[in-house]
Image (cartoon, rainbow over all chains, first blue to last red):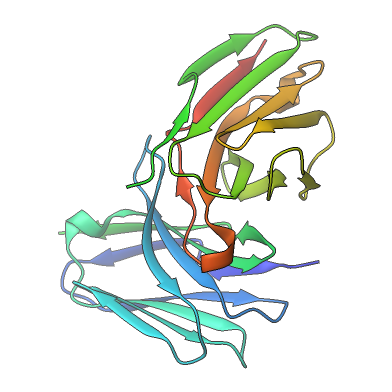
Length: 108
Length: 113
């Protein structure tokens, strides 16, 4: 059974700081996705990672995938308040399974 | 962009009622999913479908069934609603063969009283 584990589950950081969110999964897969969810809203796709070593960047967020380690990271650079949200990783092995989410709060 | 539309944003039902949650997508995607989202548990897969009339159980199918009679529509059915099915329900659609991400509907917050 596929398990997807994110850590940390809660993250409070100050503006301008850097941090990394980790996503580990238990079964071989080379398809991993990152989503963002704002309070009361649905999920919005951030990144699609489809191969070992894939790296994608959008603004202050950068995602990478290491399929051998079964690990993806979402790195936040110089955080700003607008990045406050819950971030989910999801692994695609015939279906799509999600981690528990990381609730990020960026404080001034 | 893919549009995924769920029939209701908020729903209140009584225990024992049969409940239908409808989801429609407009981009001809093969895969459709139903998840429930609860605080601290993330999204848990209830059922998914990879083609018309095809369905597969997810992690928590008990108490639910699904129907996919047309490619664009995927329905979640609570045969006899119970209070522990109070949750946010999210529908998603994705193009399985081309490895694209899934697109989500706005969610249905169901309260069973």
